Image (cartoon, rainbow, N blue to C red; front, side, top):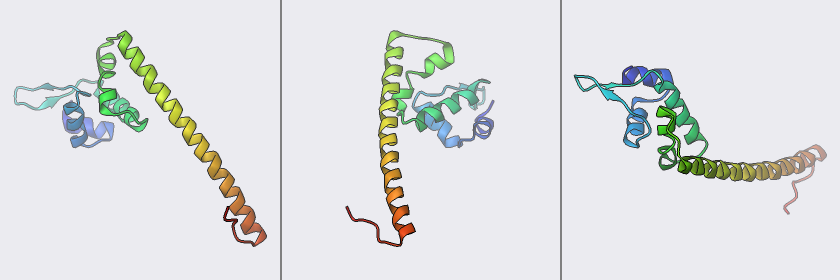
Length: 123
């Protein structure tokens, strides 16, 4: 499929696809006229890239994962990298849960203050 069709099906911009190629995250063949032609599974690849970005992975962390996605190539280093990224995400989740719990406590204090018609405590 061509770049415009991939962009439309994957819900990303053409510019994003070109960036993914520059970063080594996505590959395309070139037609005789020089146009990019992507494989049928490119939509799934782009969605995976988007999900990995949303999880907080940088391009340099995603790039070594993509050969496994494209060809099934696996290495011990890839497993180590994936496990390290998962641990980083798990740590981030823990921090978010802690922040959410603190926010819940503040919401409770503010709601009680409003209900009782008194100002919110300052400490």
